[in-house]
Amino acid sequence: MRSIIVAFPDIAITHKIRDILLRSDFPVRGLATNGSMALRYILSEDGGGLVICGAQFPDMTAVQLQSLLPDDYDMLMITSAGNVNFAFGQKEGLYTLALPLHAQDLVSSVRMLLDTRQMYKDISRSAVPKPKAAKDDPAPPKRGMEEQRTIDQAKALLMNRNNMSEQEAHRFLQKKSMDNGSKLFDMAVKVLKSLEN
Image 1 (cartoon, rainbow, N blue to C red):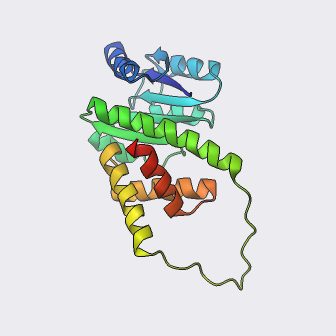
Image 2 (cartoon, rainbow, N blue to C red):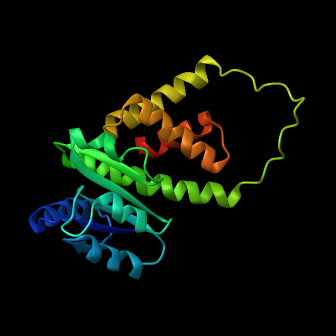
């Protein structure tokens, strides 16, 4: 399972987040109170993971730390509602949760990020490159009502569990489906299965 590093300037918050995660059987591998300490933990771990942190450390911002992360690490930044939008649209793998935060929201978000990253690894291992469409190929058929309903359900679940706007949820599904060469509908089904467990 991927590693989890918890990093907040306030050690009491760091311990509180760690305790919530340990009660849900998540593998917390390190605690940090600044960006440099978090980066040392991250670089000593193999197999990727998730950094859960606030927006600002004494030595750097969370966005600066995220730019130094290996590609197999994601970041879940917990911040006030006013700061959520500044982080969205940065490097892939940066997700936000707005305060106030309930323990169940944190656990659901962490589970989704760990599960979907593993799911994407499984998909990419089994993916076969598709030939490029010729210019004369007809446009793909429009989505059916059932497919659109499934996509809307996945977006609603992402919005509810991860405090995303509808646009952010749609971009999340769209980006993940493009990264894995799958249809938006197929990714929506996978996200629904992952989040409903």
